[in-house]
Image 1 (cartoon, rainbow, N blue to C red):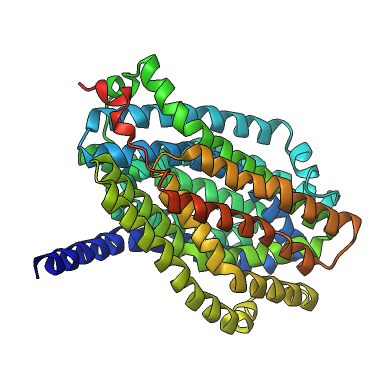
Image 2: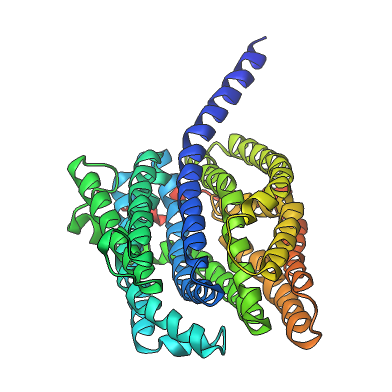
Length: 462
């Protein structure tokens, strides 16, 4: 009888922690994606060139965002494990390295966006009207890169230490401000000038400034976990940095190479036609909404599994990981069915050509049918393998399938064989199948579990 009671207690604790972590993160992503959907609907009223222009400029921000995600995902591995043993000094050091690395990335992207925006965007499209609109948008949005980096780093520490509600509230506030300002500035409502695409960029910058101010004031006023002083952020030795980057660099490379592959997809779509890139932009927004719960689940998995590994409880860590790998795809099947049923209703809000709507519907259907495999891979790589410090293997499976299989297939099918756009999109699924097979084998072996707090990082405590 006692073992049964113990198992039930563990199960109850597992699901309570899962919901406490995953739901706020999922809600934050849902708010962001939903309001991004509203922004897309607003801009679609200006025409398909405008929506394509904003979509392509956001590809640069998307790349920047993925570099930040790489840095902070690597940092989150250490943060979660250190929080398991309540080691705040090392959490502050990890935050310091995240901010320094993120600043370097932000400066590079800001400089390129100001100096050669047309060159960056010409990689995606040759349409001069789209490039001109997109360049104006990108130059303004680039102002928000450094504030975004700071917010990203502090929010990552908060989530990794279980404080997930604060980032949700602050991000929700920023997105509401962004959407309201879009309404005013895109169309010139309430007596303000009609700025169209430029107005959307200005709204984004203002919202990001509010966001970073709110998170810094709240963190330091309430002395939360990431409230570190300058000496605490910079108390980093060479051995500490080496151990940090030994685990983190594969994550950064992973996100960078993955971002490069997705960028190649976008470049192929853009060269196939402006209508196609508009359809990809619309369907991409819908896909992000469909995945919000699972991004929250993956990050909750990283925190929960990382905490257990940090305290040396590998058995519970593996059991938690197994539950996540089954639960995610199971819920994904239901989400896929719901998504297919809602396609006509979703697309009814867009004022674009029927050709664009038809293609968008087909792409969303393909996504919905493959969502369980995508979810397993997401939870495996972001939630399980990375929480166990198995970042090198994550790098291998996440990029090999993309660059060796999927990118060549998309390029050849789209630009050489001239396949229909939905067939070209279907080629991207090949990487998901590749990751699923190799990832499942690695997960079952348990060789992904590594306790990083036993390294020399933990020896530097103050």
